[in-house]
Length: 260
Image (cartoon, rainbow, N blue to C red; front, side, top):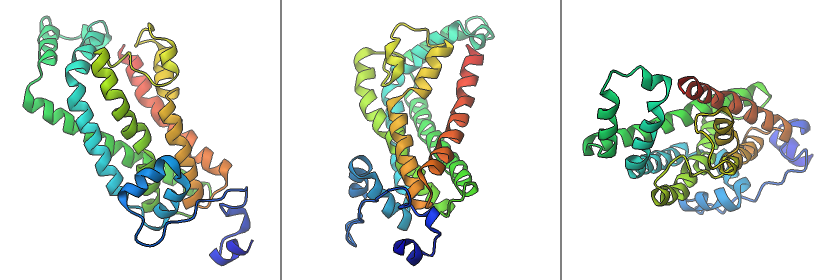
């Protein structure tokens, strides 16, 4: 109660109102980039205390860009041909002129170095743009649910939390993809229960998207972050994160299924 009064917030909107206890912040000067990466894994509550004070969203965004660009460049000789094989029997592949698929497949097997670099940079940039869009969407929902944070703070929460599903996961998956020489067979989640499933099936697409363990981890950190930074209850933070996320990721799933 006293802490709520000192912050000038109603008791019902305090992050402590339902038993939440954030980790104490580091001492001045100890809130460094490496420390934030460690806290992301071991003490996400303390990380969000510092994100609330100084978001530094661009640092996490730049790391996301570099990791995704490097991941895309590394696995392109594997992912390119595999994606072309999936396209061959898809609706999009059937619309390609005769001989066009064979030409594209040959280019995927041996990508041009310049094109490979440009595509990798594009993958990193598109990932960053996606996280930016997610930041504003979740920030909007949090504000509509009574949250008291700013959009700059929402950028910080989403960017740092996104290092789990977009950053850590590619570090783990990259060597597995190179070992198996397959992007589709490497799944860290419920999709791994269906190793022989058709990648174009509805069930497989749903499990890949909604059953990924790193997505769950990242969502949990998002809930912690909005709860701490936007002074929300656990329920309000969870709804503000899970509902828009589920709707947003349904769009690419629907597009993929429509193209199959």
